[in-house]
Figure (cartoon, rainbow, N blue to C red):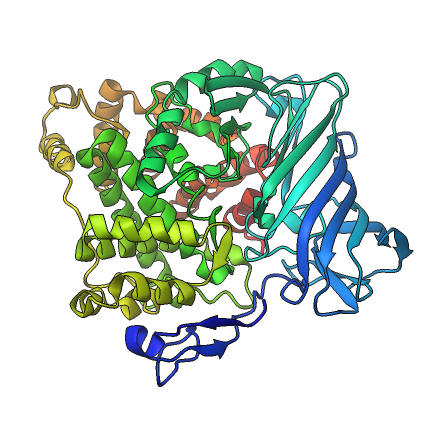
Length: 623
């Protein structure tokens, strides 16, 4: 990044602390160097990358993408070379301003890949790179027909966050580097291609699809899906894509997505991306959702048949403001995406479903926060909001800390200054930083100037330094006491004291009440108690993935064998790491290593490469 001018308020607001910008003793405007993004090998901090034209073909037989990436650049600093990120790409040839040029690839660096060096002239305007993806493209999952819902056609999808875009196109792969793009994608006949851009709603005879993204986005928001895909309209600007056999189920589940968009706009300003659509992917998708602009990628595990899990869509929609519109500048600032989004998601949920409902989400989130701090260690630097990921894969920062510590920090600010003033501040923040990237320090300076500068008592009570540059759960962390959970706690106590499950008052419970009911059960729950619950509530047969996963983990601990067959079936088709990792980990911890290895080796090919990487370590002990 280029040098920028910042009003640095560190000495006043934060005190001297690690990872902050150098403190000014006078508090005056000073020239500071933005911390370099250490997870890109590119030199995009010194050269302007403006636009991408991507022209590619998808080959399912060879499991590769090939074609060209043409970058429009502005060489204001008159550099003699441009450097791009690559990971397991074969570079076939390079043209600079239409003329063939010799390029070179550095030796591969672990998880970062290889820097691609291309000589350019002071007045160069275009760089065209012909390339082919490799066998180890971490962003790509190639699915055989039997791994899809329809069982007839193959499927491909990408997952570019955090630094995986470089494995399917040569790019400057950092969250602080934004560009617009157009694309031409050739796919096999009978399949539809979709991207994080303006999308077609039906297949064509040519099997060539054209895309346009006229808003600048970072590489991690580049997305592609190719398969037998159908579209269902929700309203004039929202809809859902899915395999034909899932399309009607998905459309039913997402009935309220249009209302979500309107609700979000009423909170924090206009939706700036045109359409908002969702694609429900095949089961191997490794995460709950990915906020690709215009087209959220979603796990099929949210299709419960009763619209009980679509709060995940509220989260991905919220990213259209926090993350896509205003983006963390480096992965050390990841909480700037996820903390804001988690907070925004719960505000959307409260507006649509009421405070009692949102309070349940806050409490479950606080419990996740506690668990993550316990797992990482209460003094671990990985529990700071401002991360230090130097020399590490940025995925090491993908814990619950950015989500839950970040959202609770924002809730504390809301509680301290009042919701009305905080909402005015956030609306201004999103409007003034639209289509830009921001560091933690820049945000804190903006927060001080626009909200806290005249509120010294509020600033002191918040204690920003403890939240951003301190470990664990700060002493002033806000916590709600959901009224609905009080009834759940009473019912659980009754059950543990001997009341038959059929006599418990659970008729109106939502997913979140059931999760709280099960989460707080003692670890030592007996097989007889498990059986009694199962006979009445049928947890083993649950179609709600959140409840089923928690129940199966309990079954492993309690040695409740009647659930094992259903659990294996669950593990055979679900690819979401949130569900896979607790089950395999619990098997490994409770003396069921043989069962874990047998099931994992049987279904490993159904999981995304990112899930395989983490589970290989957990189950197979690989490094």
